[in-house]
Length: 336
Image 1 (cartoon, helix red, strand yellow):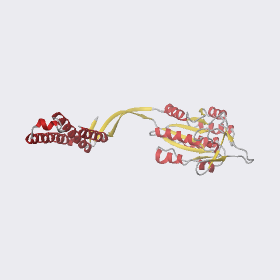
Image 2 (tube, rainbow, N blue to C red):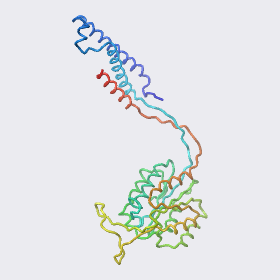
Image 3 (tube, rainbow, N blue to C red):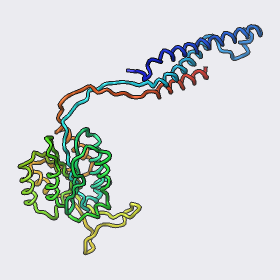
Image 4 (cartoon, one colour):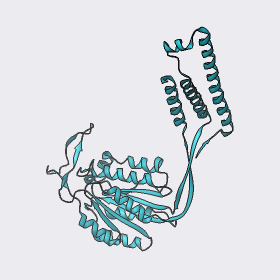
């Protein structure tokens, strides 16, 4: 529905547009009267480009309509629509992100870590009123947020963007999933809200044993109802080297062992599946990074709980359409 911010002044704009049209007709009539006084009108019309009566009427209508449209722009035209707004129960989602050096492998483009960050960012942009937390882990786990937040742009996404290749090379080497589980469990608030943990890793466990992981998580699950999703990333068929890049972003070599041999990394889906089964969670794997978005959206849809529906009013400025219409009418005026 179209309305104007200064609705009371609309009749004045219409009146002025009408006056402009009448003034244009009056001037045309005076011009024709002068031409009749100057000489024979049929002869003058034959050898000149004087518009006919119908063209003058059309030109006058274009001019007055263009002035009317520009006048209505001053009144701030707006378009109002309404749509159903689904009110849902808020979630607490804690992302547990592997930042070990193996996540720099480029079997997933641009690499495992960057693709994971891109899809987490995409999911967060779809949230509304949900709280999100962030745990990163390599040889040790670190909580980058003291508590889950619903300030996505200024807090969560800024912290997420700080995780880059330099950060990965700064943290201790290793993939301590057990420590990450324990820290993530303790990062949830005590609020009565649905809690979801999404752990994203390539699954190269190097430090803590599987029995320790299972034991630690079982103790915590007895006290908290947390839905756990383990998401693996990376090519499970072919091992990939871990590139080193210079300041310009070009590959300058590959990670090597102390013996000088190139390090290759390959995800371990068997281990991750066992961990997911142990903690009563769900395991999915994405070898290329193309399915991460779908996996995340599935998780969000599964735990979305609609508690009510309200009509939401949406108001948009539409002055640009009036300006465009006025310019088109003026162009038509000069063409005629």
